[in-house]
View 1 (spheres, rainbow, N blue to C red):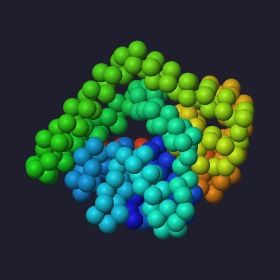
View 2 (view 1 turned 90 degrees about the vertical axis):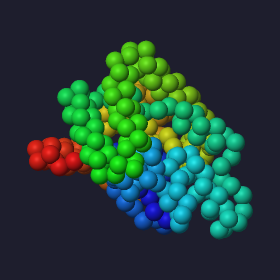
View 3 (view 1 turned 60 degrees about the horizontal axis):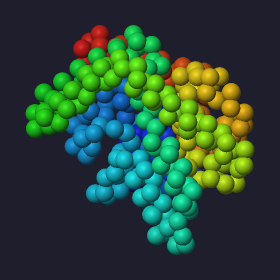
Length: 265
């Protein structure tokens, strides 16, 4: 089994947390979307959406997060027997969490000069890949159009407010649940938690812990609890805990600046 992913990607974190918690072996391939590597023709032919992660098991390719996680659960059940660990409550939480798209929220909390620099670089990557693979030109053109449309959406305050409101509603509901149970769907860690933890990690990456996490005591307590899990340490902690966050960001910034200087897209 192959997984194409990157530490920055919330959906990649969700799938990797699920894989680690389930003890499923896989081959890891880092693909940095900030440098446009997800636009390489090899991956683009498998996944025209260019979204991460991409999960491949033989000829079977899946690139929607929920579908990957549910596929893994079915795989475990078929290999080990027994019933699925995904209860109705777990599934409800997974859908609630999946209902919030972090993209606009993240971009709206990223300094304009960095966001515009990355956006310009990625657009140039798409144009370069379009020239290299003319048979995919029409699909690449869709991604190029989407990149421009994102800038228009970021100028819409109503859309940004809607994204924030959905996040606040999700956090408030989780806070209320955590007064009754240790984890989101009960007293045991489930795939609902694997879906939710990356939301908290994204808020930490954006330096928004005080505004969204620490003001909710049960979520703050829950977050400290899950940080001690081996899966968290391997998937998120090694990249974003303390100074590691800045190392990860600096490596990407250096790559982008160097490639831009030499026009290597």
